[in-house]
Amino acid sequence: MITKTVQVNKSIDPTSSECRNPIGFSVNICVDGHRTKRYFRCKRCEGCEIWRTRSIRAQIFNRIVQNDLVNQEGLLWTFGTNLKYNQDNYKVFRRYWTKLVDWIRHTYPDFVLYFRVFEAGTKGKRLHIHFVSNIWSKKSDFQRIRQKWSEITAIPKPNVNFRRVKRCSRCNMMVDFYKTKTHCGGNRVFKPVGIRSALMYLTKYLTKEYKAVIGMRHNYYWGKPLCYKWKLVKEEVIGWNYDENEPMHYERTETNGNGRFRKIGHIYGREYANRNGKYVVVGLHRRKISHYWRDVDVICGWNGYCENTVVKGINLMSYDKAYRALLNTGMEKSLVTFILKHTVMKSKDDYV
Image 1 (cartoon, rainbow, N blue to C red):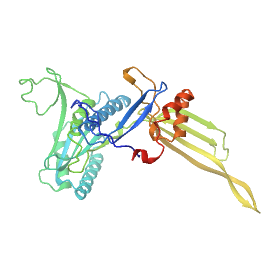
Image 2 (spheres, rainbow, N blue to C red; image 1 turned 180 degrees about the horizontal axis):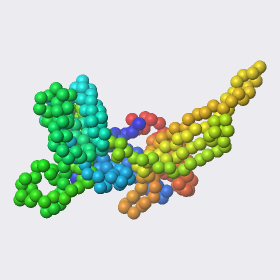
Image 3 (cartoon, one colour; image 1 turned 135 degrees about the vertical axis):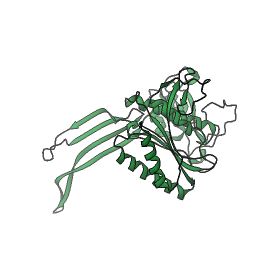
Image 4 (tube, rainbow, N blue to C red; image 1 turned 90 degrees about the vertical axis):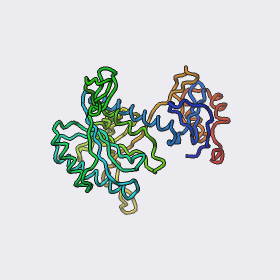
């Protein structure tokens, strides 16, 4: 993407998710002609770190509700190693994890992995794992899993622990249930919380930094129970192929509820062959349809009152494409021409 580098020099709230050093911008225009700039994030500054964490947490809330996991309780596990972060050690570390999770799934068929994070420590850069799973109530289970991790990593006493996250009945804060002897002046009355709170507790490991210093970002993974479920939006059937006993043209349009869509299905087309210099139909060829895209509306919000959906990235489009896009919103031709006069780039050199 060709954009102009932009430096925004202004006072920003330290808790804001606004990017401190945007690397470019695009111009959004709504049907009323309002122009707004959307800056491209550097994905390294404090604001981008806050934005990333908030976006992951928002997805957690959305996925838990969508998949009916609100009342599920989760257990937070940590598995440490003595490997310092580098590319070779990281490959070894991933093999350790694969062996462990394969063994757990074989030994405990009811094991459920909700969310997993690979991390390199801030100080020692030691690779370790955090993940949230369902709960084993027996101490013997913990000892058995810890022993297996010791065998995999060849560490006599590896750093392995688990935490149940609960909520204090006095201050209503989420706390580590196993490290709360002096919490709230010795108050030991806690309320159980669901998987949402356990995952929220885990996301604190995503807030530390982007690992730019050691060259590694947090590597997180959604477990199958938290994956978005595809839901049918539209189904289209045209014709029927009696030889194969299926439609000639079949399409399913589905969405996962997070702005992502896909169109899957098949279509039959004629298959030709050259017979004595003439092309004749010799059969039907089945072609698979598989198309994925993302469609998320951006709202204008001009001066806090405009709620129109905008046309995104006008300055990055060709003139003809931007002209058609704005006409489709219902704008007058004269207004479209006026808006695009100094907005759309004439050549790539304008934004280098």
